[in-house]
Amino acid sequence: MIKDIYILGSTGSVGTTTLKIINKDKGNFNIKLLTTNKNVNKIFKQALKYNVNKIVIFDKEKYKKNLDKFKKKKINVYLTIKDALKNKKKKSFLTINAVSGIDGLEPSLNIIKYTKNFATANKESIICGWRLLEKECKKNKTNFIPLDSEHFSIWTLLKSENQKLIKKIFLTASGGPFLNKKLKNIKNIKPRLALKHPNWKMGKKITIDSATMMNKIFEVIEASKIFDLNINKFEILIHPRSYIHAIVHFKNGLTKFLAHNTTMEIPITNAIYVNNYNYYHKHNFDYNKLNGNNFIKPSKKNFPLLKILNYNFNNTYFEVILVSINDLLVKKYLENKISYFSVHKLMLYLIKKPFLSKFFDLKPKNIDDIKNMVSKTNQYVEKYLKYNDKEN
View 1 (cartoon, rainbow, N blue to C red):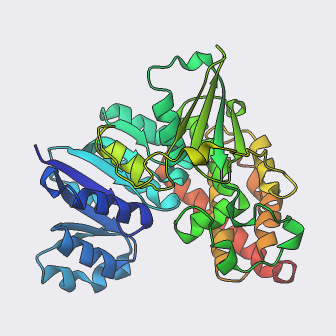
View 2 (view 1 turned 180 degrees about the horizontal axis):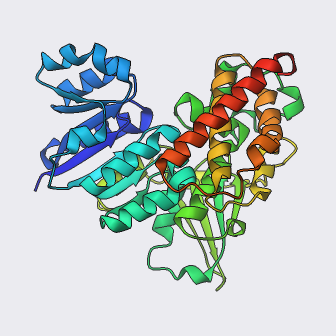
């Protein structure tokens, strides 16, 4: 039986990897929907190559400008998920959410009711809107699958396990490109060097987050929500080889870990094939990567953003503000408008500002509340950066 698949954010690294996987097994899958924000040329080529006749372009200007281009090839183009699927009665087998940033939350909420399985690598939407996503999945009897390598690993390790027996869960971090450098010595390091990740090929934003350790902080918060565990149950360990992705230590003395090569192909394929996939690689299991693992506890001196984990995470506006500030600071750094050190300094400083901290005990009720807080935070940070330009 041919299975229908939707891919949100098909032009990014996770989306592109998903398409390559499905392309190897065209007879069993039918790609029915692709989305992008602005990368029109790439999604146009994808639509032609994979014979997809429904495309969503979220950027209004790009959407209007390219309507004729798609129409000539008899490809239907929409501005929203709701418009694209409004008459769809049969659920797709799987939706992959590969959208980057908080922009992935709204399409996630809109597509869940149209799919049997919802697999997401979009950590920001989970951090900011987990209760909304969880509610939507339960309401529509949609299975939730975490797609980040760490969370997919934990999810796999905890199957058939009693969560009450969990003593500690360790998420591993590569340490990024500056693992052996002190922060004081790389204060003004250029983005091109920060983008040289030693193990993974990822998008620019997540690569910078990996260098600052913000990505791992997000993953701890995300894991806490997905698995409904206190954040104190989690710990970060630097594992430079990036071969072991998660370790679960149980109260009965047993410890389980999951290892795989540094490619998103493995969690994605196992989500698509429900753990029934024959992965081939010339080094299918490399025991040498398990020799001398050299796990390291990260230093708050070199990775000061780890202090953020001392805050409370109770599905309040704090998570939304945290994600919004980080998104904007990384954007400014990639544009060479602030220094690498300023990404750390400003993050820790801005979350203490009374204008933002007054919202930390309040909870968003819906997607509009979250979008309004993102806008409010961005405006505040932009204003602060404008009037404190010399300090950054």
